[in-house]
Image (tube, rainbow over all chains, first blue to last red; front, side, top):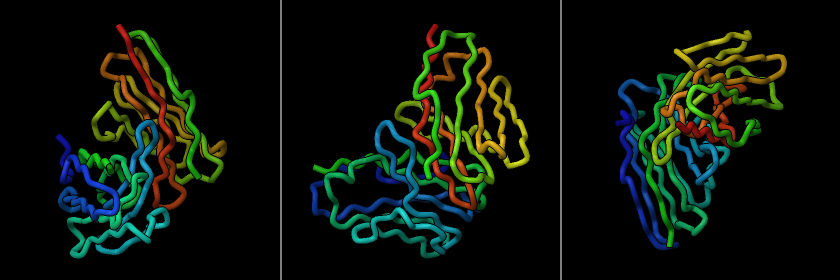
Length: 113
Length: 108
């Protein structure tokens, strides 16, 4: 079982609705990542945190996606409004610091109807 | 820029060997390797830092040629448990960019 906790495991919602995902990394891990993975493809980095600071969000669609890690521990990724193309697996990972082994959570499977 | 992986897919019989290649058009600081089984999260295998080092764990090893900006993953005497999709992740600074993956199927 993965040590990085994510919830929910599955989410089905209609387009234009708001969606939120939660991630609790391994204790002591300073770096936290949010990835989007489309079936048959590699994980695509959406946002990377070092403690509470965003160090990379170049691929995050900022008109609809937001992410925060207020106290440098757990993190929330939000989509508002959701679009059909957002259907994917959303993975959270953490590592002691950048460029160290990443530990992935089980992910949230999002389906937009 | 996303690294390129080859082959896209490979089918092996138990006991056979395989090589998965990963290349980048950018200068690399390190290469990560992960394996993802169907319906599960990716699992870390190893990291190679620039310096041309080779790492290994039991029957899975890897090399990194920083001059050619390439890494290869070697699976020796494959087992059924090796089945899954293998991703390389390349870093030029602190950001890991994952390749499209290589699907490996080991059959009895």
